[in-house]
Structure formats: structure tokens, C-alpha cells
Length: 144
Ligand SMILES: Nc1ncnc2c1ncn2[C@@H]1O[C@H](COP(=O)(O)OP(=O)(O)OP(=O)(O)O)[C@@H](O)[C@H]1O
Ligand SMILES: [Mg+2]
Image (tube, rainbow, N blue to C red; front, side, top):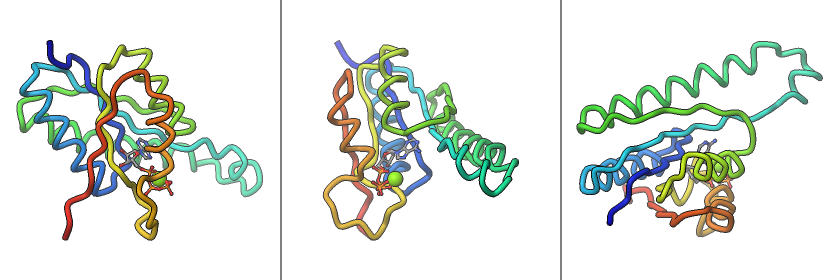
């Protein structure tokens, strides 16, 4: 039996775009559904100290834009994806969502926005690999 429910965590980075492309192809071949997740940080500390009360709505708005763009991409390819926006630590939210939604595959980027990093895998991917309830497919950004 193939995959039925694929989780794609996105942060707007090039690698997460490539992960989404791969996930859409896998979903098409397996007749699977896709959940696209974006996690925005809880920066109550910043809001408290600097009184930036609109920080949360700004994160939320940007997250929604990312998710809608990703959803449009999937729809163009014939896959209707469900989008989820949550607040917290990316790794915890990704693992929690995979558990709660009974996902049987997570497809994510090897790296994210930290383009200076020379390490093999970004910290979110490392943590998800160590805690995921299902297989994780790690996709690398295409070489330019
Ligand atoms: N906030 C987030 N919401 C959803 N998915 C995320 C988020 N952050 C990262 N990811 C997922 O994890 C992948 C790897 O990103 P990660 O954050 O681990 O690497 P990085 O940003 O290059 O390095 P680091 O964050 O450790 O400095 C991304 O391609 C994306 O699939
Ligand atoms: Mg990151």
C-alpha cells in the first residue's frame, strides 16, 4: 500500500519549495492527501519588551501568504492540499501535527533560511528526524 497522508512543513525557503514539489509528485502517484504546515514563532518576549503588539498578526499574515501560495501550486498540479498555521517551535509542531493527523510521511527540506550554514541538516530537520512518528523524506535544494 502507498502513502495516504503526507505532511509538508514549509518555511518559504528554496529547499522547502523543492520538498513541496516532491511531495506533490508522491501524492499524485499514491493518491495521497497533503497537509502543508507553517509554524510561526511565539515571541511573547519581544512583544512584552518592545510593545510590538502587531508582531503576531504580521507573522500570521506572512504565514498565510506562504501557505496560500503553496496551496495554489499544489492545486495547479491537481492536488487539493489542506493548510495549517500554528504557533510554537517548528519541530514540536511538525511532530505533533504528524501524530494528530496520522500522517504516514513527512517531506521537508534539508535546510531552510539559514543559508550560511555548512552543516549537513538544519536543526529543525535534525529534530524532526529524531522524533517523527513516521518516515521522513529530506529533500535538498537544487544546485544553482
Ligand atoms: N517555521 C517552520 N515551519 C514549517 N516548517 C519549517 C519551519 N522551519 C523549518 N521548516 C522545515 O525544515 C526544513 C529545514 O529547515 P531548518 O530550519 O532545519 O534549516 P535552517 O533554517 O537552514 O537552519 P536553522 O534553522 O537550524 O538555523 C525546511 O526546509 C522546512 O521544510
Ligand atoms: Mg530554520
